[in-house]
Image (cartoon, rainbow, N blue to C red):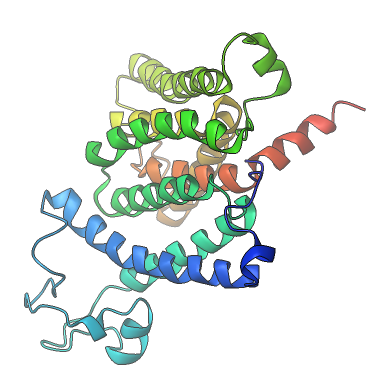
Length: 300
């Protein structure tokens, strides 16, 4: 996705190095990653993400604030164990915190400190949650994908208004010109609906055909709902790239598992949401550049 236009906070006005903003984004991203661990643990179990406070899954002892510092507490203070019962604490916790912090920093660098940045950060945070929940439970919860779709539609309308620019990859000059009488935000919403249809619709069609041809379910509807959300936000071009990258990485991992297990079972169940999530991250960050490079190989 192309970088946004127009800084929210001009460096010259506040005389603060832009690096400070990026560091602040990374730190806040780590804090969000800490909360994301609560979401990943509780949402699949249909527990409240607000109450009670964070506690050890083994002994139920409440975690002290100083033991809840992202990454640092797990590595240095607790060394991967509960302070009360000494039960191991999964490495997933610092991994989610570090990954969220890193992704927030990369997206801030890629998008720029613009009105589009908060939307990109919220979107990628939801994707991270879906990846880790699917990895553990083979589940893509509706409480994330449904609001995610609504959020994507709101973002598609708001960002062109705030930036006074198309911003999204699918809003090419030719596409916008096709709807010349409509305001940019409305054209963006049309693009979102096309993207959602291409994403969720194509995945549903593949699953339906596979079930008809082989008599087994190819994927769950959670993957379809996830791609409705992704398609609405990224647009049809980046969504097709997401599907391609997800299918390719999933196939490679699947073949690797079959070789390791010395099996030839094509029905090996893999949480496809992980690979769709990876494809989404790559598409969000580098998709436009990848597509333009690919097209340039055929257009001289």
